[in-house]
Image (cartoon, rainbow, N blue to C red; front, side):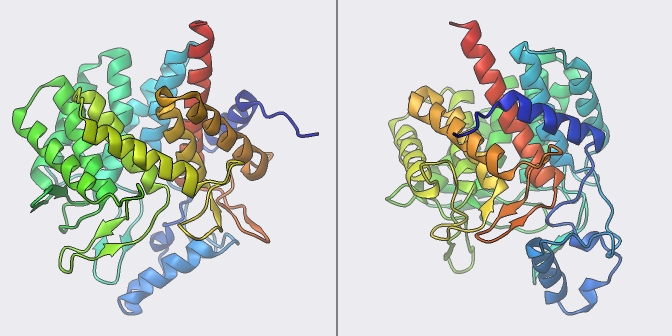
Length: 395
């Protein structure tokens, strides 16, 4: 007989784990925090070291003298989750909300206009290197989601100030590349690029700010960014990951970023109160692809189309969130979100509370990652508990 899964029990184990760790942890991409001079071994040194470490099922970070750290993006996810829990009425979480808000207020990236956040580790490609805490639109956008939730809950003027400052960062520090169909907002201030989900997250930051203080110029940037991403959707509903600005060639990588794109489109459409059949059709088409092509019926995700393994925790958590976000389109999405949650808890949660990184065909990578695995699952389970509490209160 299949064991019944209780999301509240799973969440409580996870909550105790991350609190005991004081929200510090390792990250799949933290290899360059090591004092080992990987950058001395040609431009490929940091890249190879990071990729090998990501795939290594044995955690050798202590040998590499990599310490656990606090990731600003994870703190943004925790802030949003605790606001959701507070709003659900299932407990008292005011002190946690205040703690994460204060931490984010005091731990911003420096040297750039406005307010921004980055990762607590350096990362590199063969051509580019980003130092620790260099701001990115992705980290900043997920922090802003938490800040906006906190602003909604408390009406705190500092939260409003930080959101408007994040919009200033997007507006003044991130390059915008124009196309016939719209524009793309760059991932970082350090170089222009064209990553679809990152561009939409930049537009999302502007949309949050626009809902507080209306700005016609920002609204045009937002709509142009959406228009461009919609133009890059393929006929079957999927989006690739990015486009090379020099060659125009797309990078075919279909994974949890499909959920990122869908969530951003939904958030922006609601913040701008858009009623556009083209937007709606793109979201529905993308959601159908996400459900039918990127997940098995039992709730297990594919890694990257068409590769089945490894089962990646970030794919699982994003699936829970996206299908829950689109539950207004039908009960099937709510139910499938729960199916994904049940499979993930049964197959990828450790008895100590944390979630495993990857499940491969013949073994499981059980390393605990605070941002990549636990913060995302913390938010996903929080949203499920909020949905369940809201449903009960309204029926």
